Length: 249
Image 1 (cartoon, rainbow, N blue to C red):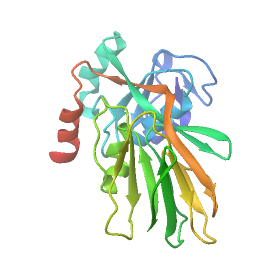
Image 2: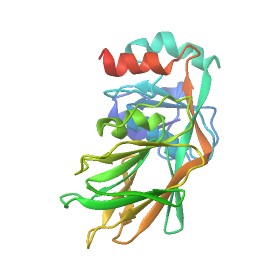
Image 3: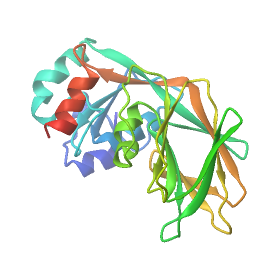
Image 4: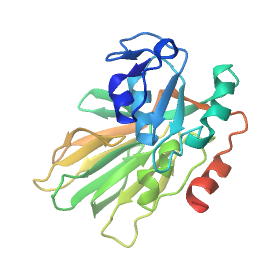
């Protein structure tokens, strides 16, 4: 089942009996989802099937495609094994954001950052009740291992193997000489507090605006019990993918 807007976006023809073009997939359970696009498309697919435990297979038509299993030139060769159930579904950590009693999930990252055109924000953070630091910055990004190769990486944060369960905290353009990324264990709870005077910070989940954090407000971020399932070929290797996408590109 393929949303019509995706067919139009990539100038695809209606597959007739091979595919059903639909405006709304509803809550129907499917065997797996094929996401045609970049990593952003894969994240939207995960968000769409959140709670259904639907595995997602990415075909890279984007720029990086770190989460993709198939490149455009290899579709004919590489898609057939997946259709014969010859694949592995790797479980990915999710982040759970608790803001004002509302619970939300993210695959890649949760970012708290200055509003568009705004001045720097002053953000503090604590781990398991211990106050760690308060810094002037453009924001803070909390990433999963899968998200460590995205916004976190561009902010100078570490790349973390998908085989680890962890949270990664990295400052966005910190105005300090002492800022370093922090890697947290699965059961450690992170709280971010907005110490700015009169300036709200924007909250983003996987790049989607999810609200604002007003002065004096705080949010908590931790690893969720839920998992996302990413379809990978049996020979998939995190470090081989990292080398091909970031080092030899």
